[in-house]
Image (cartoon, rainbow, N blue to C red; front, top):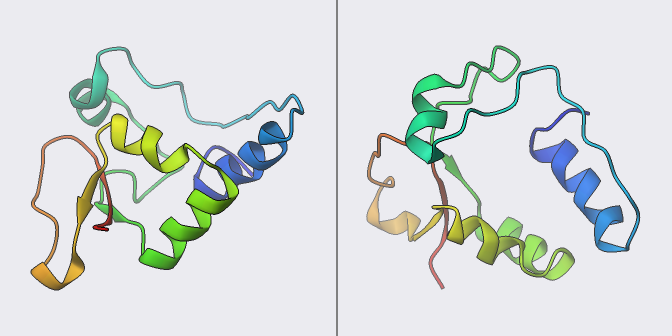
Length: 103
């Protein structure tokens, strides 16, 4: 499936049960240097939406938190941020980010 959202969740679920999982993707590995370097330098021809903003709807956040404990916290630690959709779109940032429903 590759290393997109579907492939990663498909890999994370059996890994959470203790199975060894290998994720393969046709695009190159991300460059070193954090979010700014990833956004600036990582070319992902297999993922046309790579530079678009990404939001996880409340039901998706709840399901992710229930099925993969710690995943939401990890994404927040990597730069995802809470956002309430009723306040408008998330503010634009130079680095790619993920927004989660505010609790």
